[in-house]
Image (cartoon, rainbow, N blue to C red; front, side):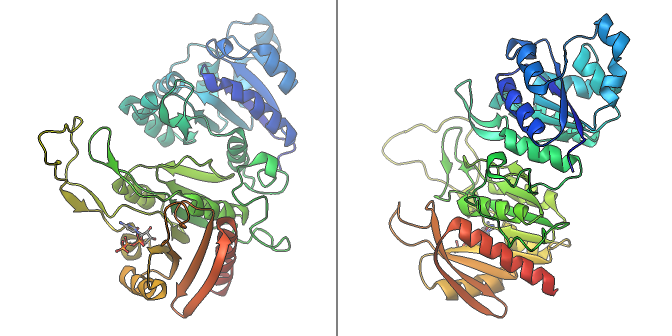
Length: 429
Ligand code: CTP
């Protein structure tokens, strides 16, 4: 689909600008053309020469070029693109867009364009979390700009958290999606080289099935939640997020639109998946409800059962011999809440972490949480060998009609089989 599409790539001033070079390579490789606009601060990080060589197109840097105005006005430049991609989108660029400021070529184009715009933010974690940035992003989304969620991880500045530029492969998948293409489709994100693929490169469904989840929205939760005690301590669990990420990847490969609500984990975002990072159970609940409606929801996250009553504003100090008592409050049950929701997904799947009487406890959970299936793991075993955090899983699938047991399998294989079972179920509805 992408053969004749044209991208206008605006490169803002951040250390992640160097990744724009790789993005250009991937865009070209997928058959699209790309023309670059480099901001003044972007030019501190990459040179016009690099971008021109990779894009095989002239690079535009200034509003005041007579040659450009004679040959191609900035209005035309902004309108000829099928999609404008801002990568990296700095906090400053985003703020200017919200205010409608047009004081250089990039911001003028963004104000003048009638093409769709995809912003790919990258910035320091504190800048990302700042109320001003979050307010700006909410406004831009209301204005119809697609804003990708940044990845979480170690940053060039030495800090850690959300704010990293997503991998170029994930950006390409989003570009394809914005252009009306199909993430995970052959030749694009489905290829190993072009997508973070927790599925070991194996397709999630038989090649003769043509994208069986196309048109469906699949919502997945993954990872643990962190419940803060004070600014430096939190309650957590050993969930790695790997099973949930593999399921999200398998559903995207099968053609679904996938929203992955991820607790704090350091895994790359699977190709073609929309990731929403959260920290606490309350944030996860909000993100899940915001993502509705969905045809299928798979709640893989190991949600902390309790949070502290109140969070200390300062680090709690050791005072005397007795440890400070923690007052806990129960977290909402996100899965049970979804089962009662007026937009309840047609197929609602819970996971269960059990250390004994797996099938019995799973059946009880199916009833208690009013979901359609429970995928129960045996998480007993010593730390390091347990399913939690490990590469393999062995599961009981409990449905209204019976129980299947899948003996020890890699998590990617569990994901593939589960998605195949979902496809079968939806075909029978
Ligand atoms: N779950 C949820 N919200 C919670 C707790 C759990 O949505 N506050 C979901 C999990 O994502 C999973 C399922 O409920 O899909 C079961 O999680 P599990 O931790 O096994 O069960 P709990 O309800 O916490 O029960 P218990 O800890 O007593 O076994």
